[in-house]
Every structure is written in structure tokens, then in C-alpha cells.
Length: 58
Image 1: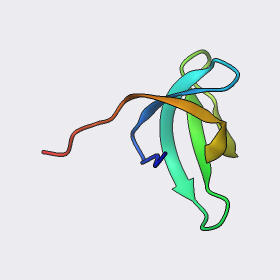
Image 2: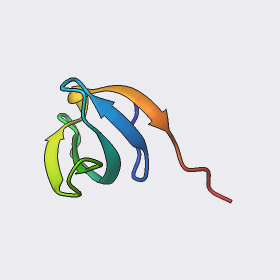
Image 3: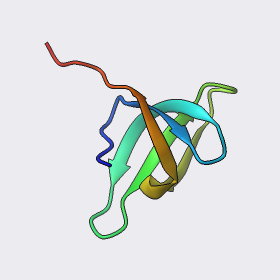
Image 4: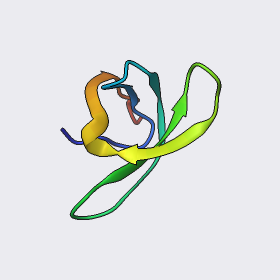
């Protein structure tokens, strides 16, 4: 699954939030701004199980 900056995603642990940064080549990392407390945490892209919403560029 390809995750982009600005996507709203759900993780394996059930947390949801907005992806605010992505980096990496072989092992892709994301920085997720959690909806629950607003803090941003780094995690592997493989922890994402569902893409809830993607922002559409206009």
C-alpha cells in the first residue's frame, strides 16, 4: 500500500491520524499525527492497515 503525506490512516493498534511526513527507501517510515492526543509519532509504513481518506489535489 502506498501512503502519501496528508492521508488519514488506521494502524494495526487501532489508532487513526494524519500522515504528516514520509521518508525511506527500503523501509518506509511515516510520522503520524494521532487524532486522540495530537502528538506525532514515527512508525513503519507497514503498521498501516487501512487508508481511510486521501486528500484530493485541486
